[in-house]
Image (cartoon, rainbow, N blue to C red; front, side, top):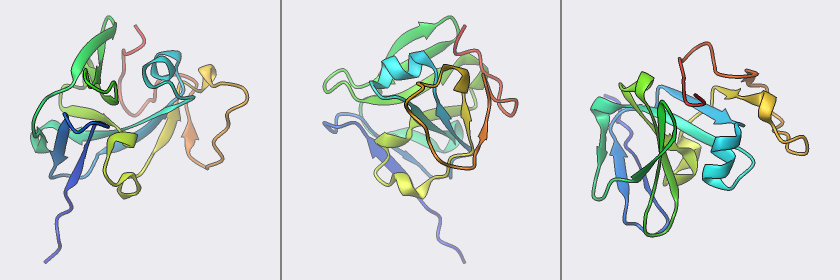
Amino acid sequence: MTDKQIYEGGCLCGAIRYRSSAAPTRGVICHCSMCRKHSGAPILAFVHFPIVSFHWLNAEPHRYRSSRFAERGFCSSCGSTVSMYEEVLRDRVQIAVGSLDDPDSVRIDDHVWTEDRISWFDVNDRLHRYRQSSVVVPSKADQ
């Protein structure tokens, strides 16, 4: 019998907490300008949890509509970047890796929107890089 891992996390102040009983199906590092603005960092890493296994334990993030098809979630108390919602990906919840209690417990699959990468910031890994959206998962977040 194997132990089933639980994934938990939340915002800086603790007002938002979440839990997933299933492993993420995907992990991505995004270099787009909207993710930079949302996080205040040169890149933003997300993991995709199946919505059926995911639960907000108390408050849910406030959402800001950043484009026609996407909303970005944050804590209204401390401002922490927590999530991303894309209409085309309704079967999952995208969670900012930095909000996980144990970010080492997840994997990243690739980089997206590398055409927007900041020239002085380079991640030295062997992950696949897409100039725009991944061909693996549809996205309209930039529209």
